[in-house]
Image (cartoon, rainbow, N blue to C red; front, side, top):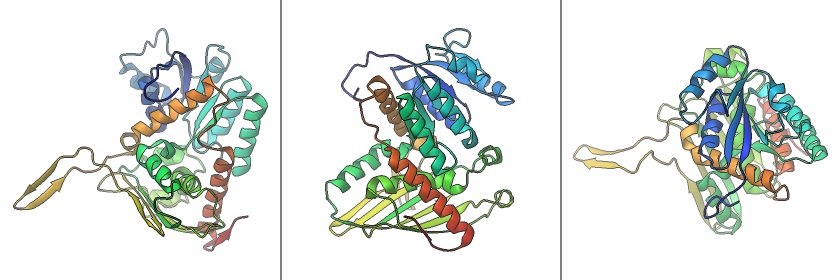
Length: 351
């Protein structure tokens, strides 16, 4: 059903896998939706106590009744009352959780990436087709109101043929090091730049033919992990569009997310929205409110809209998914090309 102006009558029992950083964002969306009941939260090991503490602070949840905190996935899979599964666990676990949910007859919304390789992503979608179930990859930028508006204006030809696209993404808060350790083999491109790479596939309408990437690890612990915390990628597309992505794990002035599209008839741009619109002007100059601190606040609306769209497709499987299968696969292939370029220090060409 539409996000505004319609009453949704179908109520879905949802299981949330993982209650770490990403899981807590999805928890907020589930609690906000008037179409969801949180049936299960799955956590394991030392994370169970933390999850219980988080959930105990949510007054609307009944942990002794309607919502269960479990450490066995089988409890979720064997319950015929579970209508959908949201996967927000570490990257290395995504593929297994997705496949098991589909085989148990549960539609899935999974945080990016669906799996650790492009071939595994394709295989997950093949599994979804065999099971006849919706499978969504969590590219939430597509559901952000500002980026969605830019997409429509671009497709309406308001700036003509795009020539150059610039994307900036810098985390307002440096993740706890345990986040990177739990991410397994997820590099900065697979964990962070993947959002901007998806945006480019979405807005340009095709995948790139060439990529070149460079990066540097300013944080010694990140360097020890074999990754970088600052990266830049240049992408060339068949239509002639050139694009740049600059990405950083930390920004002292807040969560920095900007987009610029230069076309032969004009310019489209998205800047950082302020937390509020208050501006002070006086004899010493002017002061404005800083940007959002992290992506959970910056993209709260996007996360919710993403969930509502997923539920639309659960309710009506004939409704097309906004995030297309081939786009997700192509995005992952581009991620892998960027990783290869960074490692080898040269341009990588894609078919």
